[in-house]
Length: 338
Image (tube, rainbow, N blue to C red; front, top):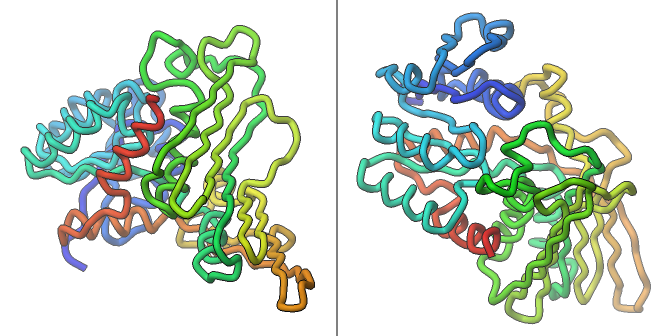
């Protein structure tokens, strides 16, 4: 492995603490050098050698840093990513990439002009449930696919105190831009761009200004229907992954353990990381030649968000194609802003 990539985080809130710092600090291809913490300084409690800058400008003025992770509020992604590239940094941007298709094009165009890599962080491609579902689909055991459904639900009746997530006057907020990128990317990663789509949204929480429910129906060739759904007032447990084909069905709950493990301090290089406990297996039901249904458990794949950072390393050092492509993000954004 060639020289490690010196990296800086734009924020050390939930996303920086859980989804980025543990991976940068344990991947030999990176060095976690600095973070922006405007008030409370917490990063050094876990990373004693880290530099805590007071502002984004201080972080971007650090000439040693090659990669900036843009994990600030959604409406700032475009501004900060372009500012980082102008300072000579590659960027890994949290979802959503930006607020509009025009902004996404601007990001990638600016990256090409400046010779910098623009990469989008879509970690749910590496959840255990998605990887298990992908494996079953690619095995062909379900026959020709009829419908695929992805769900990610919550029960959060209270309005978020972070106004940038709840105000209709601020771009790229609400549930559509929060969980929509995850679910739409799952569909795009498996099936590409749909032939057409229909979007439904609703507002059900008292006092909410932004949608807290969405449902997309994506139509693909060969009569394949893909449904992605999310709501903030869904009290019961719903399967995260449902696939129905001409020869069988697969159902898997959304039980990926990575976020909970990272939140409790587990590092990605520990042996138990990403492994779901027994009892969370998916269920595969197939119909044999005698028209008899046969059901079997499907062990969960190991979830591992480290794949994103490995890909970022090879994109920066070897100019490899990042798995989340510009086209993927353009298709996603078209559906988000519809």
